[in-house]
Length: 375
Image (cartoon, rainbow, N blue to C red; front, side):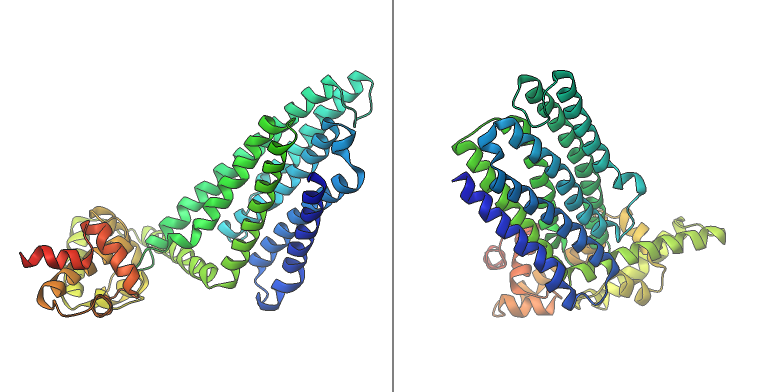
């Protein structure tokens, strides 16, 4: 069974690597950031394919458990490094610090040094199944875990920033398009944490881990391709560019010695926002904070800072709150209207999204709310 899984792993990794290398470029339009991420991902998958191939052809598991563990670790560390950097590259729009590139190589060098030292002290070949080499393999697995924890921290920090950028730019909740990234980060971490626990298990437990590993990698690849193929990456970039432009506005005003958040400014923005809401500006679908700032007539950073002083804090929450209030009024005044009609009238782009956020806000579905108001 293990041999069958290894062969399946070889073929699957080869197919996924070739898809990234030869299929994706047809519709990437020379996107530098995405191209770097796909090559990093392809490199990680290619290394995994090589690892499965070595295990399949040379039968390290049959030679002894330690031989298989050593080979696995020497491939898992660079593989996880490349996949983590692939996601970090997407998150940072290509701006990865030099020290972040070296986390993986340092972990790999430390793991290799530990195993070579153990082999030298023991006077045995590197690929030997001895108690000393087993201890060295466990210590090397700690290097793997430490490396992955470092990348997990970086990836989760950037993920939090990306979600905030989306919520501060678009008029609806869009963090679900980053859910695959969160799952992928956690999967990489869990796989690393399981290594010292399962490192010397055999039989069904090892087979289950192998299935989990291959399935998780396939999920990450599938979601990565889906993220790139849709306009999700473009929307994320638009939101992040807004953050950069807002920061530039702050710096420009600072050079001109303008106060970013005075009481007069806050009052003026609140009054302009109330006037904009009274005119129904929030009832249009697909608006962004850039659009609203232009229509209200204030810099984006001032509108962003003002929103932080409200109970909503973020642009999408503020817009959604006032849309739900408008929907409540329509549900009362037009009980014969369908949810789809009310959703369109209030700026929600789909009926399902309207029903979801309405129930999340009120604890009732639109129909239940109508019924409660009729009594």
